[in-house]
Length: 426
Image (cartoon, rainbow, N blue to C red; front, side):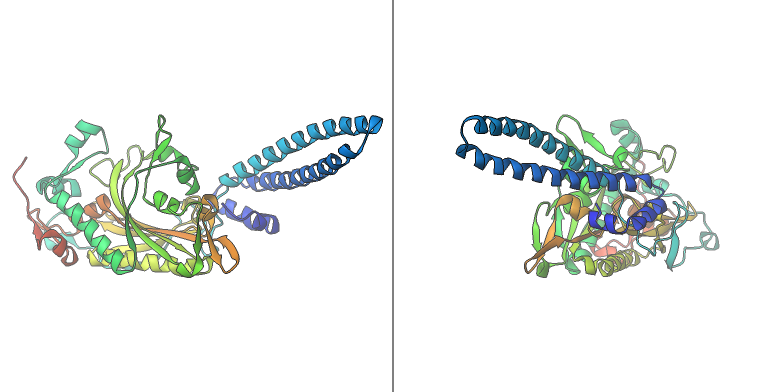
């Protein structure tokens, strides 16, 4: 959530941010009204409590009619205090409810617009010219079936659409990608973490995934637990309700988890293969740092993602997402999109978001500098979303005979394999 003081001091900035996101601007004025009600009701409650305490000191000293009158007044005052307390709680609850609906402030350099209004910051590598090489590229599912690596038919039989099995070299390729990604992350100073896949509502809400993204989340009603769509959630909640020492920042974690997404609203999109699925594994970078260092750390996360995709020898581009495509918690978000030959376009493989103090305020995570305690900043960045990375590797490194060349950086994690060869039909 944003700082209420900033809302009071510069409501026009918050209105502009909401407008850029394509979100309700009226919520700003509703929140200002609720906040004023909260503050005035708190003052009123404190005044009544002070009067009640003062009266409580007079009653033991009084006698006769005076005492009876004071007792009568004490009863009236007690009812008034209860009513003021209830009003204070209601006002605070309304303020909090509205505050949780407000998105983070959009960074001033973010392009304004919707999903298609991103800015391309950089293009790395050149897509292969398969026509010049004399053959038409196969898509990742056809390649995966030839290699004995992907089985979507049995995935659908067992679990339904958008589920799959990774078998043989497909399973080995996942393990190789995860180990290679963790090796890069630990070399950069990240602490590897295996995170829970189920979290409490506070963790999910605190990271901002129960707002506009709620329809994409799996909820276990009986246990009131949520399946995470990214290890960003348990990593952000890892230090929930804690105070971290400023001189111990940044704290960098590389989390591995399975991720679960309903893919709500994606009906008919990417239904073939494993590009858009309900369950996949991911290595996620997460950082706790000072607000002053957050933008520089955001650039570092982007560089680590670029390093990763370059090591896999994938052509990609870096985009600065438009304001309407950010998600509620991010002030700015960069995506790295790899070229997918059979789609003839770039598709998102990694992303990194600067959420400033938005998540830390919701999760009550603060930093201590001497005697001063204040919210810190959190950032996240996908290092390897396994299924999409497999799609990109298979399609970009395929050869005319259906085999797939293994990028050099990945070979040590695949037992030295240089090529993935087709296998007999299963």
